[in-house]
Image 1 (cartoon, rainbow, N blue to C red):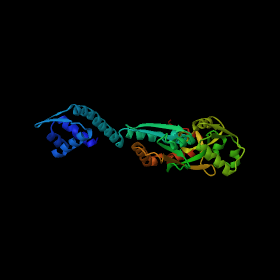
Image 2: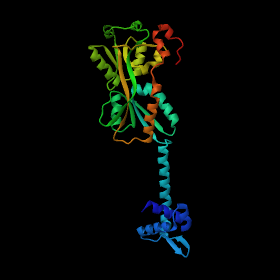
Image 3: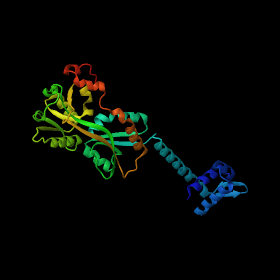
Image 4: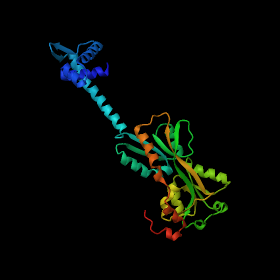
Length: 320
């Protein structure tokens, strides 16, 4: 059965008048008659009783009319749903993030996005880089933001924002007052590392290898938050993202060394699966990320001035 024939039949059945149905459909009456005749031929049954200028539904016509109301109602609701998706009035978005991005970079951006598009149901999954990488390759998450480099034949990859891993320590650590601690001095201290699967860990170990560091004393933690707490309360050193310690630096609780050879640059990347057609929500989210990347700058000049103040001065006026 042809959809246009069904729509025409429904109008005629509702009006029980070919002329008025033709006017509503903005068609000629002969065109309406041809569509009804074609539908009757397809079904092999008459749909209307024709008595003079009056028409009425046959039994077959009545059954078809009831079915048509359901079919056309479903089509209309489907069109409305699709239109809502196109207009970002509804939909879902599953975002996967490696831990640094998910915990310290994206939260404010996600909130801004959901305020702009309240009809989109947004879920943010935070896990290790390896795990989120696997899920975006398998199409489990719609879009992922990962620490790079990211290499895959099945993913679209584009740079999002620059990050830097810096050497961090407690403000009370004996090395915090040194402008440029030596490599040999650093090697004598306990190094706090992320666990297997983390890009932070992989980048740090690669950096150690380039420096020729071996036989280091290390302790592994599953999360950056655990490393931060250990740094705040103990004598260890750790390479962490600048984004992860913004508050602690602003409050004078941690000290960082961000000069060579203690600086590890990297990028965060937006990734989607090539084999999955992106939904309007995914496209809108990627566009939103690109437009708001300039708001993710690490620290203003005012904040950076904290580095050259005394330890006690840096503790004054901190608001958390």
